[in-house]
Picture 1: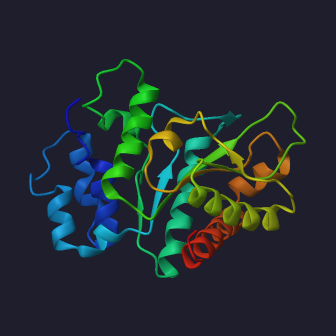
Picture 2 (picture 1 turned 60 degrees about the vertical axis):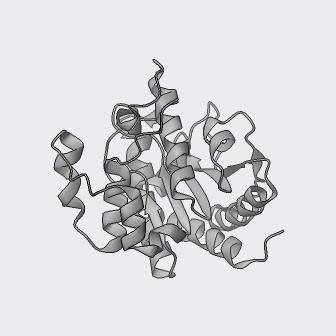
Picture 3 (picture 1 turned 90 degrees about the vertical axis):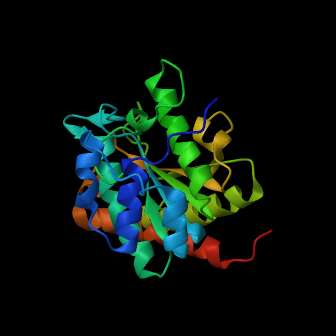
Length: 246
């Protein structure tokens, strides 16, 4: 397997935002125009040491052709991105170094030119996990929206790796979201999830609420409630990063 083609729009946009450059600089590159060869991660790390010590990588679920779950004209990919941006800003205000792997509506599978497989879904997940392994953040949080056949089911669910540190992170984020939603859910292991199996950093998948539940749907789509969800996630992340590691 050849070395992953990770010098893509996701990381260029994320790094540009973090170091204060214009994200718009790279929009043409994603559309197919050439991007200067100097824009690759080793040089970025050398010029900006902070990139070598990323605290949180936010994995923004779905994007582009992959809308995720839906309810009417509401698409998971749009909710994920909206709350991810709020989480990004909240964590930055707390002083953490944060990256997002998607800052607009596009599929990361389109950036994966190295994995020779027909499955767009696997190419997408592979690109996400390899980006995490290349950046080497302290943690990765993957934001998603849940759905269920039972419309009364509500609340957030945090899914973790088998690693103790991932479980610690999941407990901290779950507790913060439970307090917001007024629920008592416990984190659950995600042994079969591709992203959790292949990401080396302590990682969790955060199902931020059920789009099929009316109250959750309101929280997931109203601007103020999205901010509260972002703040709860950030509070859990902050608690984890500040506690002694076992």
